Length: 240
Length: 240
Figure 1 (cartoon, rainbow over the protein chains, first blue to last red):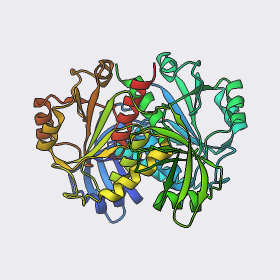
Figure 2: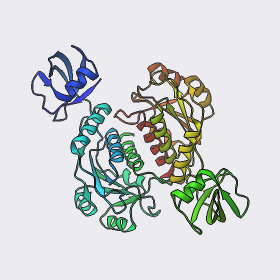
Figure 3: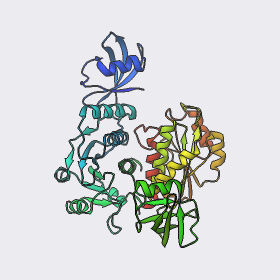
Figure 4: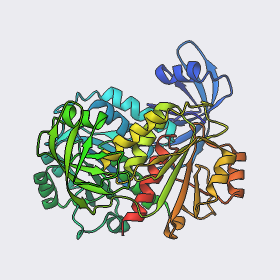
């Protein structure tokens, strides 16, 4: 069933949907009276809705029942990605939503090929909303402001576990598997830009209690590493 | 160090490289005399090479030493993907190489939006070669012919473990984690096309000893599911 994230709180037996969701329901999905949709409201509650009526700018939905489904991870994961270009960032955004991340941010690192990304928050939020509807999330992934390494470290203090994925992780440190066996509530994951991390950055991260882990023997591209680590975290948190 | 897969077996102290690798070394990487490269030969052995000389169609490389590096998974994994369009197939190909898959094939399933993909093997092999060089593989992922479900089942008999990733996997069957804890040598993984599997296909797969597993509570897109399962298999096989 098609899912829509609406920017209101469901308080009554009927709600009205306008703008792009209205367009999607009417013109893309070509739904008609009595078709059913799922609605996620601003409080993150999910409702079953039935289409009552269209006019030329809004659709009226009857709220049939509150659904108890929860497709969220049982830990909070923030994904921090070394600054890469917009296409790659958008691809990672989409898949991070599918794989359950709660927050996303870019980090300016020394080897980032691009030095600046215009934070088109509108466009990013649209991507997150669409991917959330498709993957049946009940919470929207938040997009935080792009940070410097120093700002990231300050920001990371609030987390139980800080992981940095680095292809040259030392063999004698704790493995990713050992780290994920410990129960954490809030994890921050950092992956590098195209050129990877500089050693000096790794030293700073280590000194600030980031655990440096390898994602395997092969070199993963900047867009692949965040997906791999998110898939692994979801796997460890959901499979028993 | 840049890695090149060459279509010859290293038998002498010097080799000559032509065509696209020659172009890449000379014009893309702008390498000069005495620069070092890694060479993977047709037998899968890796050598350290030093550039001796260019002429206008080939570069002569001195073989310095044989390297003992092995970045391959310690299990053989074949990835079978429900037939999707060429862009998506190529994206999955690239990332499957990075994540360590040994073989790849497409499977015609009922909900595949496209019914036919022209098997441009040249182009696919070029993608595999480039991704292998970048990710430091020492074996090239093989591309098998597109199969029907019936052909896939016949083909799968040769494997120790057959996994099908399905969002509606039953809760009372073995989890992916339980399956991966058992030691297997050859795993076949099947993921669906955009529209997912039909129930009748799942029934046929079950009857042919495919284990039906979930990759988590969210719905993954056709291009994301193969990456998630490959990342998880690599993680379980490489992290101790």
